Image (cartoon, rainbow, N blue to C red; front, side, top):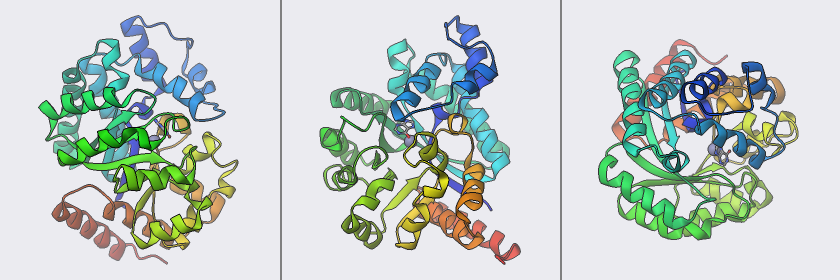
Length: 331
Ligand code: HPA
Ligand code: ZN
């Protein structure tokens, strides 16, 4: 199927070989010598143990070419995986402290996006993702800086990084400002944090979408609300198993959420770190949870419907999906 992905961090698409060649290029000392060394490090106990490696990876991405190649590698994977539309989180706070200018990052990314659009009609939305382990004021500063030059590139803001200890109520000012500037809003919540963080993200931050949100299942009233208000959850199955949010894929609650009427979607989060791109997530759900073609289609349709695209573009992509499904009927 033509697919949409709504939850992917560009830094989480860094290929091990790129980590090595960029580190060598910039003379950054990293504790890995081979692709195998890097892959062996993809063994996480929790979100924080992953974030430590993830921020090591961002330390080797420094010039325009690095950002270009990072984005082009991911968009090339989208082409292979038939991800016709993707909404990508960009996290400037991972780079600015290394002396990288916002302009460097944005021009490298934009060059790759322009090539992918011209080359194979790739549809891309960028989300300005702020880091919650840093002060809210820092996030507001980055928002203002991005808005002053790149208001036409970013469609939405998001909130990522360590959830526990960094609750949503600390970011109400950031979200109020972003929404007043016309940005759409999403936030990570209910991955390692409790269901209450999902409720607070909706009520205090005014988000339209929740990234992860699987722990909403601990609060039946919240599940009923998510279903009633048609609030999308961007669920990341392989990520959740890798970071031990669920012990095994067979324990994952995505199909229960779908059955409860929640608008769930499937996403890869940080595909090179978690063992698979979007198709691999669908395949894992099929193998371990007996995901049917009808369910896969419903999850994917949810993703197009929950996208931050303008309504006319969304309608055109949904029409492409419908055309494909007519030609390849679900048995
Ligand atoms: N959770 C929080 N922050 C992140 C994640 C995640 O799954 N991936 C990259 N940054
Ligand atoms: Zn994420």
